[in-house]
Image (tube, rainbow, N blue to C red; front, side, top):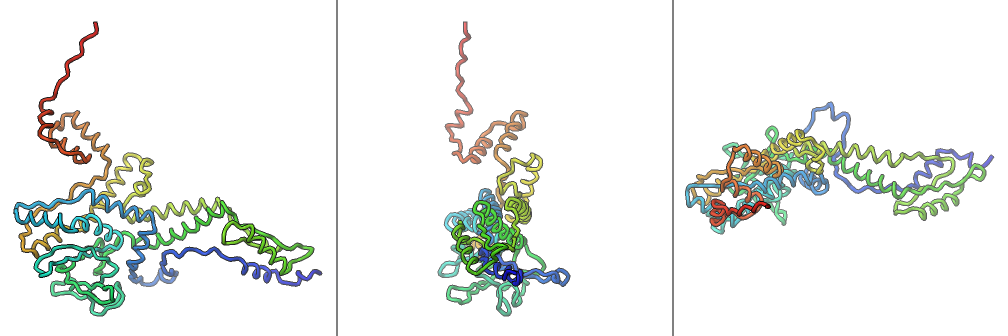
Length: 428
């Protein structure tokens, strides 16, 4: 009887498996452990750290694009401050033109609300601390509420409140590790997107789908490996036979040959003839992964409030009625964030601090979400039905939308008295 039959098959398999070097996966988002027991127990509120949410925004394309759509739509819309008080209007104009006010409320604050669910606006005074001269959108990762005892930002120590029931203020971790205090609504203003129960920290667009994004990232990594294997299969070398058995020398030569045949640094695989591994077909695995990725992307889209067809640019596949419904839902989501930005509240606070009467009207401009082509076609139909007339306001509105200069007085006169070309003579 050959010597190899005396050796247990399990031992040979175990020895072979130990020699297989697994593919190293890139470290993805850490969601922690999930157990069956936790489903039946009383759930506990565990918040995701801001740094992790920021990583998801940077690394997950669907979320990155969705939050940027919020920011671009809000910036394209813009807002208007108007006051009948000349001095107040002059101060408003000064703030809008010489400070970061527009940059913060049309760019940074919407993005912070989407990522972190919170935005912290520092009101920077002049050297005498008599007026507010500048604004700064502070990194939320460095901000915490003033608490009775400090610990982790989310769940250690109770938030201190003032006599009016508002948070007393905030602390920021300085570059040297020191804590800088800010008074609430006097030195720093806190904006939040969503809140739950008595929690002071807001909930953004990423935190509800953090687990989904984690799973999706891992599946994308697996799909990338699957596609790699499709183009560069792992070379497999079988050594030994029924007649001669297997020896350590055979295994060593088989390993060397597998590495030479390999197309990547992961190396090949060698195994004895008595061990027959099974492999899933790459094409079948790729199809299953692709289906799962689309499902997880749909969950991310639902949490963002932005239709997946808009993010992926596949809206042409939707019917007209379906696309209109998606755009309407998207508009509601963006308007919800606009209401949370509260630039009118910040402007009122600054005007009072600077000694001006805060009597002004504020409004957001209309959102330009639907395509301009549809709007032009509606205006054309209105004109054909004599519901609107060709006037200067309409023409200037169209010019503003298209980014063209407004009509001059000479152009208006030319429109009032258009030159008429002489009719062509009839052919004899």
